[in-house]
Each structure stands twice: as structure tokens, then as C-alpha cells.
Amino acid sequence: MNHEHGMEGMAPTSQSTNGTSGMHHHNMMMMHMTFFWGNIAEILFSGWPGRRGASMYALALIFIFVLAFLVEWLSHSRLIKLLGEGSSNVLAGVVQTLLHAIRVGLAYLVMLAVMSFNGGVFLMAVAGHALGFLLFGSRVFKKSTEMFLDDNTSDPPPMAC
Image (tube, rainbow, N blue to C red):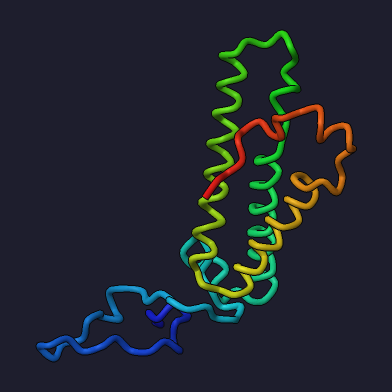
């Protein structure tokens, strides 16, 4: 049974001062700490996509792209207006909080996927954020009157670093 989990090319751990290895390969999984290329990777879940082939890896990349795209859509959505003018502030606040929680959860999933250090995952996450921002956050598809009439560009406030 292979306990290396697709990490065969990694350098061995350094020796400690007492001559023992710092990590036992049988008890712990090694993790990449630099970007790598390849379709044998674990993204978000143990064994997924793993060694299931290029088609499963492609599905994982599409999944990460969609997650990043949804984060941007939620960051620039105006779903509260769908409730109507007569809705209470409490209902609007609860919906806004739920949208924020969903957006943060999806953003953390994208972050965890990027922490797999797979180059393809990183590129798809950036591409999903970029396309989502282009479609929903940039001025490309907005009418000039929309930009000047509303100060609020989204329901949940945009993420800030």
C-alpha cells in the first residue's frame, strides 16, 4: 500500500539533532510547500481527485473555477432588492447575513483548494475570480446611468484585504 499520497517527488525531511527523522512517512501525509504541476493532486477532500485520471482532475478544476466565480457573483449581487420595498429591515438583514456567510464559506473553500499548491488549481481560481469580476463587478456591462445613481454596488459589502 502506498502511503505517500502522490508526494513521491518531495525531498526527505531533515535529520534532527538526535539523528532521528523529523517526520515518519507512515503516520503523516507530506504536503507540498511550493507550486507543482500535474493531475495527481488532492484538492479539498482526501483522495479527490487523486489518481483518478485527467478527466477527474479537469472536473476538480472546473469546480474550483465555479466556486471562485460564485464568490464574485455574491460579492456584487443585488439580491436584497428582489425582496421588494415593503420587506422589513430584519428580513433584509437576515438575508444579507446569509449571503455573506455563503460568500465567506465559498471563499474559504477556494483558499483551501489553492493551498493544495497545484498550479492548475491556482490558475483556475484566479480565472474564476477574474471572469466573475469582469461580468459582475466591472463597468464593462453597466449602463453609465447605473454607475451614478447607486452608491451601493452589492448586497454584502465587497471583501477587503
